[in-house]
Amino acid sequence: MLKLNYTEIGLHMERVMTPLELVIAQRVVLAMRLGQTLHVEPSRASFLLPADLPELGHLEATLRQKCSPSVYVMPVDDMFVEVSLHGSWIAENAEAHEGMFLTAVDGRTEFFIYKLWQMSQVPMSSVV
Image (tube, rainbow, N blue to C red; front, side, top):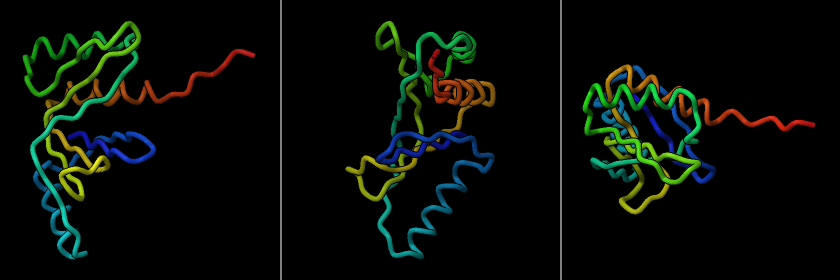
């Protein structure tokens, strides 16, 4: 499962081995114990990746083989593609811009999405 945390400083992604339903149930119980409101809904989330990542072709090939409607890769422009995922949005309220997005996709697709996101986070070193 992939867990995308959207915060005021950006996106952080991680792979989680706990089943999706259990993570959601644990988050609901935590909110109840803390007396917090919690909004959970089926949704889509997306993020950008550089279009020139060498391994992007592996993800696209995997998606063609799986014919998965839960993941799309779409070109944005010459520099970026958008990866769109179907899953569950968990936030304080329905209008929140910060929250957690959870999605369960097949292992190979998950591996490539996470690997590509990690590669996109490596800061470019400048030549001095």
